[in-house]
Length: 383
View 1 (cartoon, one colour):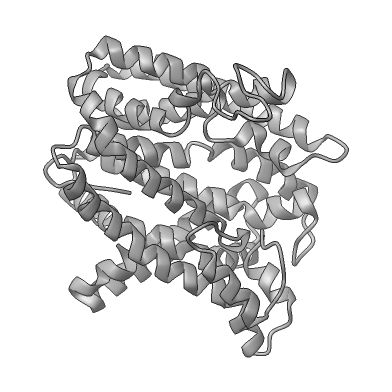
View 2: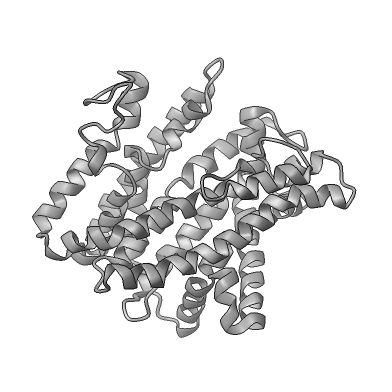
Protein backbone atom coordinates (compact mmCIF):
# COMPACT_ATOMS: atom_id res chain seq x y z
CA UNK A 1 0.00 0.00 0.00
CA UNK A 2 2.87 2.31 -0.71
CA UNK A 3 3.98 3.81 -3.99
CA UNK A 4 6.75 5.82 -5.60
CA UNK A 5 6.26 7.40 -9.01
CA UNK A 6 9.99 7.29 -9.62
CA UNK A 7 10.16 3.57 -8.95
CA UNK A 8 6.80 2.37 -10.19
CA UNK A 9 6.65 -0.52 -12.63
CA UNK A 10 3.38 -1.86 -13.96
CA UNK A 11 3.81 -5.33 -12.52
CA UNK A 12 3.97 -3.92 -9.00
CA UNK A 13 0.64 -2.17 -9.61
CA UNK A 14 -0.76 -5.47 -10.87
CA UNK A 15 0.52 -7.17 -7.72
CA UNK A 16 -1.25 -4.52 -5.67
CA UNK A 17 -4.53 -5.23 -7.48
CA UNK A 18 -4.10 -8.96 -6.80
CA UNK A 19 -3.30 -8.24 -3.15
CA UNK A 20 -6.44 -6.13 -2.79
CA UNK A 21 -8.66 -8.76 -4.41
CA UNK A 22 -7.22 -11.39 -2.09
CA UNK A 23 -7.58 -9.10 0.94
CA UNK A 24 -11.19 -8.23 0.19
CA UNK A 25 -11.87 -11.88 -0.56
CA UNK A 26 -10.40 -12.70 2.86
CA UNK A 27 -12.83 -10.36 4.58
CA UNK A 28 -15.72 -11.41 2.35
CA UNK A 29 -15.39 -14.83 3.98
CA UNK A 30 -15.78 -13.37 7.49
CA UNK A 31 -19.59 -13.72 7.81
CA UNK A 32 -19.25 -17.39 6.87
CA UNK A 33 -16.07 -18.35 8.68
CA UNK A 34 -17.01 -16.54 11.88
CA UNK A 35 -20.23 -18.54 11.98
CA UNK A 36 -18.50 -21.81 11.09
CA UNK A 37 -15.79 -21.30 13.71
CA UNK A 38 -17.66 -19.76 16.62
CA UNK A 39 -21.31 -20.17 15.75
CA UNK A 40 -21.80 -16.40 15.52
CA UNK A 41 -23.99 -15.45 12.59
CA UNK A 42 -26.97 -13.31 11.81
CA UNK A 43 -28.24 -15.96 9.42
CA UNK A 44 -28.17 -19.68 8.86
CA UNK A 45 -25.33 -20.89 6.66
CA UNK A 46 -25.22 -24.08 4.63
CA UNK A 47 -22.63 -26.82 4.54
CA UNK A 48 -21.64 -25.60 1.06
CA UNK A 49 -21.08 -22.10 2.44
CA UNK A 50 -18.85 -23.47 5.19
CA UNK A 51 -16.90 -25.64 2.74
CA UNK A 52 -16.32 -22.80 0.29
CA UNK A 53 -15.57 -20.40 3.10
CA UNK A 54 -12.67 -22.68 4.04
CA UNK A 55 -11.51 -23.01 0.42
CA UNK A 56 -11.58 -19.29 -0.32
CA UNK A 57 -10.30 -18.46 3.15
CA UNK A 58 -7.24 -20.57 2.36
CA UNK A 59 -6.80 -19.26 -1.18
CA UNK A 60 -6.59 -15.62 -0.08
CA UNK A 61 -3.88 -16.07 2.58
CA UNK A 62 -1.14 -14.37 0.50
CA UNK A 63 -2.92 -10.99 0.71
CA UNK A 64 -0.95 -9.47 3.60
CA UNK A 65 2.43 -10.95 2.58
CA UNK A 66 1.92 -9.46 -0.89
CA UNK A 67 1.38 -6.01 0.59
CA UNK A 68 4.52 -6.34 2.71
CA UNK A 69 6.56 -7.61 -0.24
CA UNK A 70 5.37 -4.64 -2.27
CA UNK A 71 6.56 -2.35 0.50
CA UNK A 72 9.99 -3.98 0.40
CA UNK A 73 10.13 -3.92 -3.39
CA UNK A 74 9.32 -0.21 -3.50
CA UNK A 75 11.16 1.15 -0.48
CA UNK A 76 14.26 -1.01 0.00
CA UNK A 77 16.83 0.36 0.06
CA UNK A 78 15.76 3.90 0.89
CA UNK A 79 17.98 6.91 0.25
CA UNK A 80 16.23 8.94 2.95
CA UNK A 81 17.63 9.58 6.38
CA UNK A 82 15.86 7.95 9.30
CA UNK A 83 14.21 11.25 10.27
CA UNK A 84 13.09 12.04 6.71
CA UNK A 85 11.75 8.53 6.20
CA UNK A 86 9.70 8.67 9.39
CA UNK A 87 8.38 12.15 8.59
CA UNK A 88 7.28 11.07 5.13
CA UNK A 89 5.81 7.66 5.87
CA UNK A 90 4.39 7.49 9.38
CA UNK A 91 2.05 10.54 9.36
CA UNK A 92 0.50 9.32 6.11
CA UNK A 93 -0.50 6.13 7.91
CA UNK A 94 -1.09 7.43 11.42
CA UNK A 95 -3.75 10.14 10.93
CA UNK A 96 -6.16 8.09 8.77
CA UNK A 97 -5.63 5.14 11.10
CA UNK A 98 -6.67 7.18 14.13
CA UNK A 99 -9.68 8.68 12.38
CA UNK A 100 -11.03 5.41 10.99
CA UNK A 101 -10.35 3.58 14.25
CA UNK A 102 -12.53 6.08 16.11
CA UNK A 103 -15.27 5.71 13.49
CA UNK A 104 -15.23 1.91 13.75
CA UNK A 105 -15.13 1.88 17.54
CA UNK A 106 -18.00 4.36 17.88
CA UNK A 107 -20.23 2.41 15.49
CA UNK A 108 -21.65 -0.01 18.10
CA UNK A 109 -22.72 2.98 20.22
CA UNK A 110 -24.21 4.70 17.16
CA UNK A 111 -26.32 1.62 16.35
CA UNK A 112 -27.84 1.95 19.82
CA UNK A 113 -28.44 5.70 19.39
CA UNK A 114 -30.29 4.89 16.16
CA UNK A 115 -32.47 2.37 17.99
CA UNK A 116 -31.00 -0.81 16.55
CA UNK A 117 -30.93 -4.03 18.55
CA UNK A 118 -27.63 -5.26 20.00
CA UNK A 119 -27.53 -7.97 17.36
CA UNK A 120 -26.71 -5.24 14.84
CA UNK A 121 -23.19 -5.01 16.28
CA UNK A 122 -22.28 -8.63 15.49
CA UNK A 123 -24.26 -8.38 12.25
CA UNK A 124 -22.02 -5.56 10.97
CA UNK A 125 -18.80 -6.86 12.55
CA UNK A 126 -18.66 -10.65 12.29
CA UNK A 127 -15.73 -11.09 14.68
CA UNK A 128 -16.85 -8.60 17.38
CA UNK A 129 -16.08 -9.93 20.85
CA UNK A 130 -19.03 -8.05 22.38
CA UNK A 131 -22.42 -6.69 21.33
CA UNK A 132 -22.18 -3.79 23.79
CA UNK A 133 -23.66 -0.48 22.60
CA UNK A 134 -22.47 1.45 25.63
CA UNK A 135 -20.64 4.71 24.99
CA UNK A 136 -18.30 3.99 27.90
CA UNK A 137 -17.16 0.77 26.24
CA UNK A 138 -16.59 2.59 22.96
CA UNK A 139 -14.54 5.30 24.65
CA UNK A 140 -12.51 2.68 26.53
CA UNK A 141 -11.71 0.99 23.23
CA UNK A 142 -10.68 4.32 21.70
CA UNK A 143 -8.43 5.06 24.68
CA UNK A 144 -6.66 1.75 24.08
CA UNK A 145 -5.79 2.53 20.45
CA UNK A 146 -2.09 3.09 21.25
CA UNK A 147 -1.94 -0.44 22.64
CA UNK A 148 -4.34 -2.68 20.76
CA UNK A 149 -7.43 -3.06 18.56
CA UNK A 150 -10.75 -4.87 19.05
CA UNK A 151 -11.85 -7.65 16.72
CA UNK A 152 -14.84 -5.66 15.51
CA UNK A 153 -12.33 -3.86 13.26
CA UNK A 154 -9.98 -6.80 12.92
CA UNK A 155 -8.19 -5.41 9.88
CA UNK A 156 -6.64 -2.63 11.97
CA UNK A 157 -4.01 -5.07 13.24
CA UNK A 158 -2.08 -4.50 10.02
CA UNK A 159 -1.49 -0.81 10.72
CA UNK A 160 0.38 -1.60 13.93
CA UNK A 161 2.52 -3.98 11.87
CA UNK A 162 3.03 -1.42 9.09
CA UNK A 163 4.17 1.31 11.48
CA UNK A 164 6.57 -1.17 13.06
CA UNK A 165 7.99 -2.05 9.64
CA UNK A 166 8.40 1.64 8.84
CA UNK A 167 10.28 2.17 12.11
CA UNK A 168 12.60 -0.70 11.26
CA UNK A 169 13.13 -0.04 7.55
CA UNK A 170 15.78 2.73 7.68
CA UNK A 171 17.88 0.46 9.89
CA UNK A 172 17.30 -2.60 7.70
CA UNK A 173 17.83 -0.52 4.57
CA UNK A 174 21.41 0.30 5.50
CA UNK A 175 22.26 -3.39 5.41
CA UNK A 176 20.22 -4.06 2.24
CA UNK A 177 22.09 -1.29 0.42
CA UNK A 178 25.50 -2.87 1.04
CA UNK A 179 24.76 -6.62 1.25
CA UNK A 180 25.61 -8.91 -1.65
CA UNK A 181 23.02 -11.07 -3.34
CA UNK A 182 24.45 -14.16 -1.63
CA UNK A 183 24.25 -12.51 1.79
CA UNK A 184 20.60 -11.65 1.18
CA UNK A 185 19.95 -15.25 0.17
CA UNK A 186 21.45 -16.51 3.43
CA UNK A 187 19.20 -14.20 5.42
CA UNK A 188 16.18 -15.33 3.39
CA UNK A 189 17.16 -18.95 4.06
CA UNK A 190 17.25 -18.33 7.81
CA UNK A 191 13.93 -16.47 7.59
CA UNK A 192 12.46 -19.40 5.64
CA UNK A 193 13.51 -21.74 8.44
CA UNK A 194 11.79 -19.45 10.96
CA UNK A 195 8.46 -19.86 9.14
CA UNK A 196 8.32 -23.44 10.42
CA UNK A 197 8.48 -22.32 14.07
CA UNK A 198 4.68 -22.10 14.58
CA UNK A 199 4.44 -25.82 13.75
CA UNK A 200 7.43 -26.74 15.90
CA UNK A 201 5.79 -24.93 18.80
CA UNK A 202 2.37 -26.53 18.23
CA UNK A 203 3.38 -30.12 17.48
CA UNK A 204 6.85 -30.72 18.94
CA UNK A 205 7.68 -28.47 21.86
CA UNK A 206 6.12 -25.42 23.46
CA UNK A 207 9.60 -24.07 24.08
CA UNK A 208 12.30 -24.51 21.45
CA UNK A 209 15.66 -23.10 20.32
CA UNK A 210 16.27 -21.46 23.67
CA UNK A 211 12.81 -20.14 24.42
CA UNK A 212 11.37 -20.82 27.84
CA UNK A 213 9.03 -19.30 30.41
CA UNK A 214 11.45 -16.41 30.98
CA UNK A 215 12.70 -15.98 27.40
CA UNK A 216 10.66 -15.49 24.22
CA UNK A 217 13.64 -14.70 22.00
CA UNK A 218 15.08 -17.91 20.59
CA UNK A 219 17.66 -18.70 17.92
CA UNK A 220 15.56 -17.67 14.91
CA UNK A 221 13.75 -14.76 16.54
CA UNK A 222 15.89 -12.09 14.88
CA UNK A 223 15.26 -13.55 11.43
CA UNK A 224 11.54 -14.16 11.91
CA UNK A 225 8.45 -12.18 11.03
CA UNK A 226 7.37 -9.83 8.28
CA UNK A 227 10.81 -8.31 7.74
CA UNK A 228 11.52 -11.45 5.73
CA UNK A 229 8.73 -10.52 3.33
CA UNK A 230 10.25 -7.04 3.01
CA UNK A 231 13.54 -8.55 1.92
CA UNK A 232 11.83 -11.11 -0.32
CA UNK A 233 9.96 -8.37 -2.19
CA UNK A 234 13.20 -6.45 -2.68
CA UNK A 235 14.99 -9.61 -3.81
CA UNK A 236 12.37 -10.61 -6.40
CA UNK A 237 12.26 -7.14 -7.89
CA UNK A 238 16.02 -6.76 -8.13
CA UNK A 239 17.29 -10.23 -8.95
CA UNK A 240 14.52 -12.38 -10.47
CA UNK A 241 13.98 -11.96 -14.20
CA UNK A 242 12.65 -15.24 -15.53
CA UNK A 243 10.78 -16.08 -18.69
CA UNK A 244 7.14 -17.12 -18.72
CA UNK A 245 7.75 -20.88 -18.77
CA UNK A 246 10.22 -20.86 -15.87
CA UNK A 247 7.95 -18.54 -13.89
CA UNK A 248 4.99 -20.89 -14.38
CA UNK A 249 7.13 -23.95 -13.62
CA UNK A 250 8.14 -22.46 -10.27
CA UNK A 251 5.16 -20.37 -9.19
CA UNK A 252 2.32 -22.81 -9.91
CA UNK A 253 3.81 -25.63 -7.76
CA UNK A 254 4.57 -23.09 -5.01
CA UNK A 255 0.97 -21.91 -4.95
CA UNK A 256 -0.40 -25.44 -5.25
CA UNK A 257 1.76 -26.88 -2.47
CA UNK A 258 1.15 -23.92 -0.20
CA UNK A 259 -2.59 -24.10 -0.74
CA UNK A 260 -2.75 -27.86 -0.12
CA UNK A 261 -0.84 -27.60 3.16
CA UNK A 262 -2.85 -24.57 4.30
CA UNK A 263 -6.23 -26.07 3.43
CA UNK A 264 -5.72 -29.54 4.88
CA UNK A 265 -4.01 -28.14 7.95
CA UNK A 266 -6.89 -25.73 8.55
CA UNK A 267 -9.46 -28.52 8.16
CA UNK A 268 -7.51 -30.69 10.58
CA UNK A 269 -7.39 -27.98 13.24
CA UNK A 270 -11.06 -26.94 13.02
CA UNK A 271 -12.02 -30.62 13.35
CA UNK A 272 -10.45 -30.76 16.82
CA UNK A 273 -13.03 -31.11 19.65
CA UNK A 274 -12.36 -27.65 21.10
CA UNK A 275 -9.76 -25.83 19.01
CA UNK A 276 -8.30 -22.64 20.41
CA UNK A 277 -8.26 -19.49 18.24
CA UNK A 278 -4.50 -20.00 17.81
CA UNK A 279 -5.06 -23.54 16.55
CA UNK A 280 -7.79 -22.44 14.15
CA UNK A 281 -5.50 -19.81 12.66
CA UNK A 282 -2.31 -21.92 12.75
CA UNK A 283 -2.16 -23.01 9.10
CA UNK A 284 -3.50 -19.63 7.95
CA UNK A 285 -0.86 -17.66 9.84
CA UNK A 286 0.93 -15.30 7.46
CA UNK A 287 4.50 -16.04 8.59
CA UNK A 288 4.31 -19.80 8.00
CA UNK A 289 6.07 -21.87 5.36
CA UNK A 290 2.93 -22.76 3.41
CA UNK A 291 1.64 -19.18 3.21
CA UNK A 292 5.11 -17.93 2.25
CA UNK A 293 5.17 -20.44 -0.63
CA UNK A 294 1.83 -19.20 -1.95
CA UNK A 295 2.84 -15.57 -1.53
CA UNK A 296 6.11 -15.96 -3.41
CA UNK A 297 4.30 -17.82 -6.18
CA UNK A 298 1.82 -14.98 -6.64
CA UNK A 299 4.54 -12.32 -6.67
CA UNK A 300 6.48 -14.24 -9.33
CA UNK A 301 3.34 -14.53 -11.47
CA UNK A 302 2.61 -10.83 -11.13
CA UNK A 303 6.13 -9.96 -12.26
CA UNK A 304 5.41 -11.55 -15.63
CA UNK A 305 2.24 -9.46 -16.14
CA UNK A 306 2.51 -6.89 -18.89
CA UNK A 307 -0.27 -4.31 -19.09
CA UNK A 308 0.11 -2.29 -22.29
CA UNK A 309 -3.15 -0.35 -22.20
CA UNK A 310 -2.62 3.25 -21.10
CA UNK A 311 -6.11 3.34 -19.59
CA UNK A 312 -5.49 0.16 -17.59
CA UNK A 313 -2.17 1.54 -16.37
CA UNK A 314 -3.87 4.77 -15.29
CA UNK A 315 -6.52 2.77 -13.43
CA UNK A 316 -3.84 0.77 -11.64
CA UNK A 317 -2.05 3.99 -10.67
CA UNK A 318 -5.31 5.30 -9.26
CA UNK A 319 -5.67 2.13 -7.20
CA UNK A 320 -2.24 2.85 -5.75
CA UNK A 321 -3.34 6.39 -4.92
CA UNK A 322 -6.56 5.22 -3.27
CA UNK A 323 -5.17 2.03 -1.77
CA UNK A 324 -4.70 3.05 1.84
CA UNK A 325 -8.16 4.62 1.97
CA UNK A 326 -9.66 1.44 0.56
CA UNK A 327 -7.98 -0.54 3.30
CA UNK A 328 -9.25 1.84 5.98
CA UNK A 329 -12.87 2.07 4.80
CA UNK A 330 -13.72 -1.30 3.31
CA UNK A 331 -14.72 -3.16 6.47
CA UNK A 332 -17.86 -1.06 6.83
CA UNK A 333 -19.10 -2.58 3.56
CA UNK A 334 -18.28 -6.26 4.08
CA UNK A 335 -21.74 -7.23 5.34
CA UNK A 336 -23.75 -5.11 2.85
CA UNK A 337 -21.78 -6.57 -0.07
CA UNK A 338 -22.19 -10.07 1.35
CA UNK A 339 -25.95 -9.62 1.63
CA UNK A 340 -26.31 -8.03 -1.80
CA UNK A 341 -24.48 -10.90 -3.47
CA UNK A 342 -26.66 -13.37 -1.52
CA UNK A 343 -29.73 -11.79 -3.11
CA UNK A 344 -28.36 -12.66 -6.56
CA UNK A 345 -28.52 -16.36 -5.62
CA UNK A 346 -25.25 -17.13 -7.35
CA UNK A 347 -23.69 -20.60 -7.09
CA UNK A 348 -21.92 -20.96 -3.76
CA UNK A 349 -18.35 -20.99 -5.20
CA UNK A 350 -18.93 -17.59 -6.86
CA UNK A 351 -20.41 -15.67 -3.94
CA UNK A 352 -17.18 -14.83 -2.11
CA UNK A 353 -15.17 -13.67 -5.17
CA UNK A 354 -18.18 -11.68 -6.39
CA UNK A 355 -18.53 -10.05 -2.97
CA UNK A 356 -14.81 -9.22 -3.05
CA UNK A 357 -15.09 -7.54 -6.46
CA UNK A 358 -18.18 -5.62 -5.36
CA UNK A 359 -16.42 -4.59 -2.16
CA UNK A 360 -13.49 -3.26 -4.19
CA UNK A 361 -15.73 -1.29 -6.57
CA UNK A 362 -17.80 0.25 -3.76
CA UNK A 363 -14.89 1.21 -1.52
CA UNK A 364 -12.66 2.38 -4.35
CA UNK A 365 -15.46 4.63 -5.61
CA UNK A 366 -15.98 6.08 -2.14
CA UNK A 367 -12.28 6.81 -1.64
CA UNK A 368 -11.95 8.33 -5.12
CA UNK A 369 -14.91 10.60 -4.33
CA UNK A 370 -13.41 11.64 -0.99
CA UNK A 371 -10.10 12.46 -2.64
CA UNK A 372 -11.89 14.53 -5.27
CA UNK A 373 -14.00 16.42 -2.73
CA UNK A 374 -11.31 17.02 -0.12
CA UNK A 375 -8.34 17.80 -2.35
CA UNK A 376 -5.09 18.18 -0.43
CA UNK A 377 -6.85 17.51 2.89
CA UNK A 378 -7.72 13.98 1.74
CA UNK A 379 -4.35 12.68 2.94
CA UNK A 380 -5.48 13.11 6.54
CA UNK A 381 -8.51 10.90 5.93
CA UNK A 382 -7.63 8.36 3.24
CA UNK A 383 -3.84 8.59 3.17
